[in-house]
Image 1: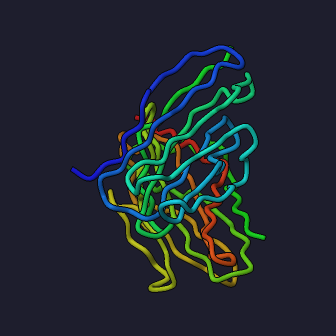
Image 2: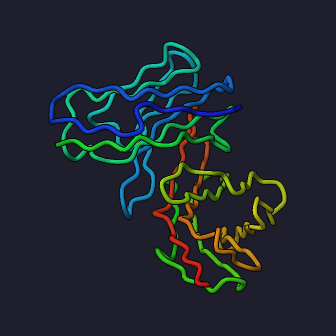
Length: 111
Length: 115
């Protein structure tokens, strides 16, 4: 089954404790991206990757890092999380940026 | 610059009546436009997409949208609402800028369906 998986689905952490949210897709897509969703703001793009070893900033990249060492994986790294990064995070992939497939979401709470 | 505006944050309809969710866009490029749906506690699902082919686009679950360049609109419609349509809907614009793609999401419209 074609899918985008994210782990963990729910995470509570404390300020400053580094964390990684994993994202994996099994569709051999070149394009992957991360979004955060906040009430009243829709989804905002954090980072995206056009292919392996090619990443670029989206609209709200501050406080986040990504890497793309393999085509199927695109982890999101928060080196020093802060409460304003409490949000719902979605990973997505596609062959191009058209018709992206979204993962189920990761709900993060930073205390 | 590209942007998308969803004109209603909430829309309430009765089951069996038509649905209209409004979206206006702004783009310096020839845009691709999408509608996504998000059911409670679920991820996003693509409803339909416009990529410069037919201006009337049919999607899943009986939804359709019409691309109107003169009005810079891409409104989502359905002839008859079903209870299962209750969800949040996002209008999205995409366009190629330099060598990269950007996706811009609207702030969402929550559809309520009354029995």
